[in-house]
Length: 541
Ligand code: G3H
Image (cartoon, rainbow, N blue to C red; front, side, top):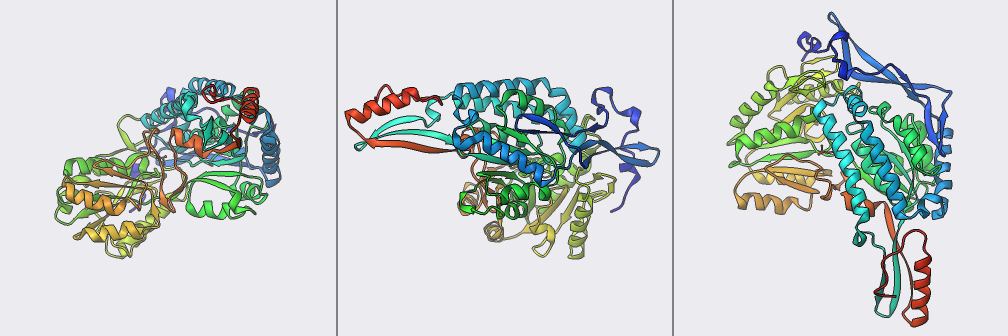
């Protein structure tokens, strides 16, 4: 493992960056959104540095893209207080607005987003190193998610808004917002993970404080003005800065009703336990995952290799759903590894806009050091890097390291690498794999590669209670968004899909009475006067 010139040479000189994909001038962002006002932060700033470097000869320099405000806890609290006031115990303009008017605002937001396509895609490439086709796909799936949410909101039977006559009781059941939602997104999907949280939270009438991740942050700046224009003051507030200097105070105040967080289990726990009334705080968490890929002796190896390559290495393995540990039966492990390493060696590294690249610069500054540590630890305990140039690095580029044979004593067997290191464990007895899945702290997804229904069924039976999704002969993934996305154990809290998310960010409440003619008329009159949207009740009232 070494810093290698061939990787350094992949970084472009300034004039080699295509005109269509040049980043704009350095942005000194001081603005943040509180209570419908775009305010200017006079204090310290945080630099936003691209994983993409520019080269002069043999020297490479990361590109400074701009700065964002390093808000303090007092300013973050102003955002939270604005959200609390806007919610006004459920009596605020946004939670009281009719569903059709809320949908109208979301449609305008979607139209605005569509206008931003070019700058958002470019921002994803420069800020998080996402390759062009994945940046475009993230943009498209985010727009689709918003469109699907709007369609879902329009389906009357999905609104849980109903009047029911049940066993002598007349009840008007409605979905109401939860209250004030604090949203924090991850850097790997700055657009998609942001809006799959914000949209259902806002759609259901909650007010929101949103703090973007430290990478993939400048690209969201145009939304400040759109949020200001489309939503009542305080319904959405956007803050910036370091988590421990801002978000801790918000949770400690006890004023947050729902904490939506995608990140590490440790981060989620240390923040949520600051809330003085933990039982009142709802969670929507997407946390660590160590998804195994399990190759059975009769697997279609061509397919297994193809899916494992994509599953481990798309976006350099920086996906929560990436395959992070491969178990391969000893009878096929040599053939598998030969093909797999050939596939890894054929992967092109380069800049995000270059055609045919898979491996791109990595945004987290400490990540390459961490990956080196995992590789060194595994080597010291008996594994080798078995692919050509595996573990070589140059500035922010890291050539994937396939580690074999990996055993439970190695850090990479337990830790979520979230990067291009692929540990391969040979196994003889499937019960050893089942034991790993059962004992693991995390249980998001797994992939099984095999054809024998008895063997596959045996594994499915044992693992269904351990993970949120079992994928057969395909890599792990979140989509399509109409299916539930969840995790078991320490991997997640809450089930997300387009329709499930609307439930997660709301709660059902009811007004109930004894069923008689007087009450029937009373409930009917109340429902007809309800400003926030009434169900079709003619059949009952
Ligand atoms: O990183 C977590 C993403 O939500 C996973 O989405 O499976 O489509 O990459 P993906």
